[in-house]
Image (cartoon, rainbow, N blue to C red; front, side):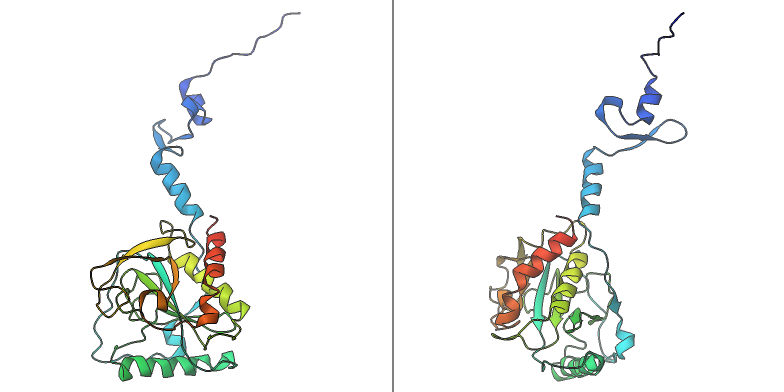
Length: 254
């Protein structure tokens, strides 16, 4: 009986189609030309970016809590990207019914827009005790809107306010911690820094903790007090920031 020996060689095109040509993952279009190499520097960067992109959480838009608009308010300003998250508390009473939060937001809006003449809420987002995330400052949920939440470090940061007062001895609700972490994991973006690390930010105001023009190394997930002389976000919430950062990193699959 005659044995038929299998062919030991394949054409370069067939090897490429199998993704084994020269040890790369090479994809071909119908004409046989390469589309991309998944092991190239750009391919690895894209793959890494995808791994580090947290999914967008559910966010209640401004119109749902009936945000007003100051007639003289200037248009929103935007940073190139979001490099860090600054966590705040609103210093409003705890123990609230989450159904009443839209009214609280309208009160905060009035205090910021009219009382402090900021033309809008200073915070980009707010999170209640039940874990509901609300859009704050106008300009676009998915865009790097420059807020008015941390004097000297509004550029390139997202201001997230926990609704309530979280001074020493207070309990930070678990749903709130989880929601803040999910929001941070998404807003830092696919090419943003590790939430557990630090980042260099340049102060834009002499009243900040660092004089104008100073390059300050701040936590990627930090508190208002890290960039400005204040007790915000309260000792209880500030102590939870490493936990929030670790959760955000896990969500980003770091």
